[in-house]
Length: 157
Image 1 (tube, helix red, strand yellow):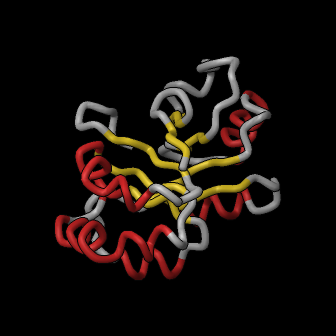
Image 2 (image 1 turned 90 degrees about the horizontal axis):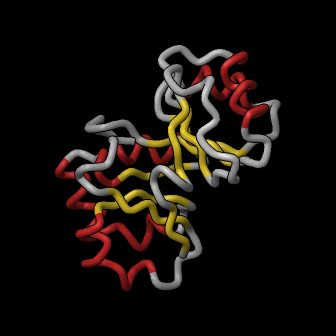
């Protein structure tokens, strides 16, 4: 398991910070947070951070898929805040970034109480609240994925 830190290993690039290079270091994951994704904006991110090969999208999945499919970059689909339908979301997306804080209360309870081990078999990245992670840390011991620890005061991803 590898911890992925918000703001360092995982950053959001949107219209507001597109023109500012956030760091000269390699960024492990970049989440596209554009209100209106365009090929020009995405190519600007790719040119600014050429070492980054893994990206996250939440909204506008079809638009991002259309733009990214030929660029040879790996991207994950992140579930959207409080949008029910976890099972259908998991079925229709190949590469999933599961955000536990984004789940409905019922889905979160189900995942953390019953399904976490099975879900981890099919994921590379999961975001989980620190308190939940501490309670369930033994389930992550032999997992080879990335854990993003979310704090309530973090900017919501």
